[in-house]
Length: 101
Image 1 (cartoon, one colour):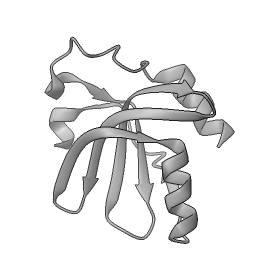
Image 2 (tube, rainbow, N blue to C red):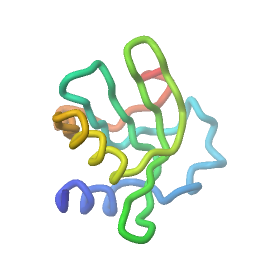
Image 3 (cartoon, rainbow, N blue to C red):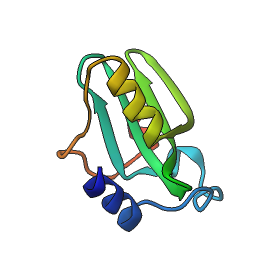
C-alpha cells in the first residue's frame, strides 16, 4: 500500500482541484483493477483524510460507468471480503476521461 499511496501523493491532484475542468477533459492518473471481476477504478483526484485516501474518479464495471467517490480502505475491505486483489495497472498512462467513458 505504501508504494501506491506515495504515487498518489506525488501524481494525483487533490480533491476538487480539477473542478473547473470539464468532465470529459479531466485526466485519470492511476487505474486500479479488480482481479476477478470486470471492474476498474480510474483515479482523477485524491486526498489523504485521517487514515485513508479518498478518491474521486470513474468506476467502470462491465458496461456500467459511474463518476463517484471511493476510498482506499473501501477497496482494501472489498478485497478481503471477496478474497481478491485490487491492483494497479502498471501499463496505464494518464488518459482523458472522454477516452475511457
